[in-house]
Length: 149
Image 1 (cartoon, rainbow, N blue to C red):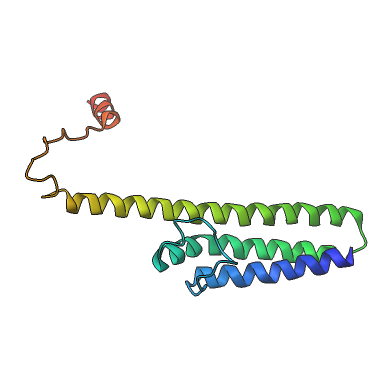
Image 2 (cartoon, rainbow, N blue to C red; image 1 turned 60 degrees about the vertical axis):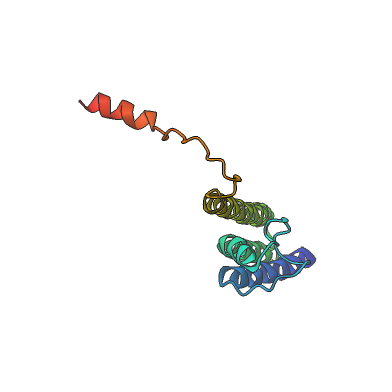
């Protein structure tokens, strides 16, 4: 279990370093380390936003990996079970951080696309005006208002 403990401590150190660099927006853009979703790599702002979102979870996963690595040096089978649970928890946190980072970029890209479409819809129809759209109505808010009275 010594080898596993050392390996987990190395992984923990990498996760903490990458998490802190991502959290502080100092992780350099590269093709080897980081979230590998095409939207993340479109611009530096997207890269930073994704990794800033994922960074805290990666740091927590690094702490979980370090506890798991330290427990591997203890000669107790029950603590090795706890080390396995902590390792699984660390893996889940890395995946969750990456997923949240990707989701953040998708939301930002959608927001940017909507703003760009709103700004360019003025005169891009070739002189044809679009029909006005009906305002959106929050039906649930109307139902709550009716129930209150």
